Length: 407
Image 1 (spheres, rainbow, N blue to C red):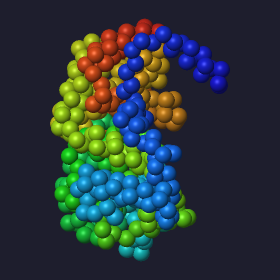
Image 2: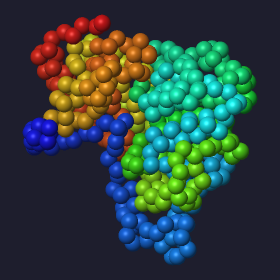
Image 3: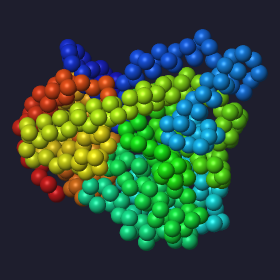
């Protein structure tokens, strides 16, 4: 396996232009964020923030400032409503498991959309082991949740509803406020959680205006360091910890706080929000140039998800018929363009993207999809390079494999 990887990497030698568009799965951390983190590893605030000495007090001050800033960016009432976690995966686990365990006895139904990210979908399904039930709400062919079905699903047994603010694969911006109003009207005691990882820093997000009870944030999805996320919990909502251990500055997540990564997450947030309108406008412009260029250069395509303002400004997802997704990611990688695919192999799963299947894509369309996410750091030259490389890669693969058909 190692030798195979070495051989693949050798094939990449000589690449002169690289464009990283796989921001769904990781990111390039900007130098400003790296520089902001470095002192906290060994120069200042490297202590445990619960201890009474200078390094500990420094760490405590830094973390409290981060709580305040993140709270401000999402419109939380106070810093106590924020909990830092090792990633959005842990935040979603804590939000769903912790709230359900705290509400047990008041009901047993969890309601989610059928296109929730895996770290929501699997946790909600896993809760069936503890006596809860899970109901999935269908979506239309653009990925919008069926609000009538949501209304029908919520009843006196419902304790939690979880719908992402923006779908991570097809970029659909869900009508969260409308969904919350429907849920609260049917059952005022039901909690509403939203995974806002793909909304934070890309669309306006105010937890008080939305009236959500819980929300999840991600660091790397706004070009912060991996290994850091956050959970918002509205004041007054009961929550049980899902992990035990030493409690530091946070009641819900045990262990020593990771000060450098918290600083990195906060710095990435600052960069995203200090020029929010300019950043999102740039992303939207680059995204549209990318999508328009692909459709101008190639045929037999399917655009996945909604267009325009109904879609997150960074997200482009296109199914390319007669070109298997994993083969295309490899072919593009050899030219320095890095994307992800909805194909089974690239996801290490035995099925295509559940999101693409849910919006009505055939398996071959899902397997031939590529997901690209632009950032404020991308340039028009980057997009032009992608549009130069992509058609060549697609035509090469189509020439080799021929038609795969549409099943």
